[in-house]
Image: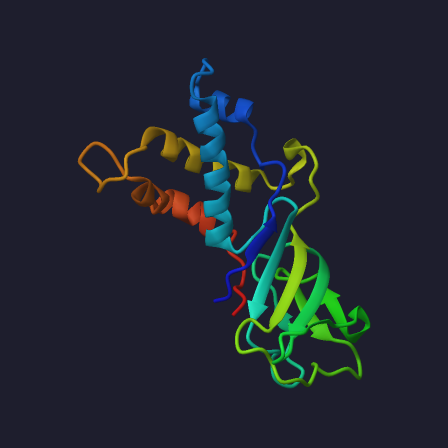
Length: 204
């Protein structure tokens, strides 16, 4: 599975600090910084598990070569995909070339965004650089607006539960009779079922 690199992280989260404190019934500010960290970590866990990107993020993937024939390139964590910024390739001499956008079309309709050849076009023919010769940069996630406008309350509920698990189970340890590690909490059948319903097809 291709893992994208985050070029520009989102500027907001799907839930805000005040909502989390209300959810956890916290009436002080002593742990606000820690809770903000938990919110980001919960969102990152959800995105990694589901293949989604929640708020506007610039991502980049690198491949050793273009696909064969007319196969489309499925972009990981491009659910939803907003746009493709650039498609670049590096030849054996280390020269980077930007492939003209007229050569490809961007599919933002499917659950996982993809790049496909335009009619009559073919993937570039070149001697590739040995590693990561193809790089595609794209923007995924919904527009950076108020998190309260995020359309899927089920996703926000998953984030609340993940943050609650991190808050209550902070130690990096194996589960005991009365406490759970975060990894064990994330595998709780009820929470896992909630998260799994948002999983999208992966890009390989």
